[in-house]
Image (cartoon, rainbow, N blue to C red):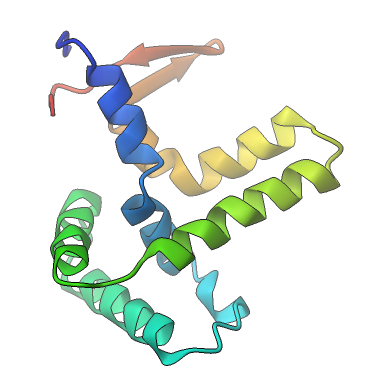
Length: 131
């Protein structure tokens, strides 16, 4: 168990970071349904796909994407698309939190499970990794 002050906030930030959301868009093959109109986003997707071919480890993927972002890779549009899809699902489901929650768990569950255990609707901190 990690008891550093702010560790839960850091974990939450990691789960919803632009890097993680962009990774989810490519990992779950959402990007082919997006008309980007400019080549830079296609290059971004190609870079992320290349990283996916290099490793199956989620944390290694995030680390490699972070390095690419440091050298100029623009992942914000991909993250914004994911957030927009969640917003559209929320509106289309008349604000049904269960529907949105199930979508969030489907796409972000792998990342969330590395930090949290959800049991009987309560969230428990399980990560031994402190950031």
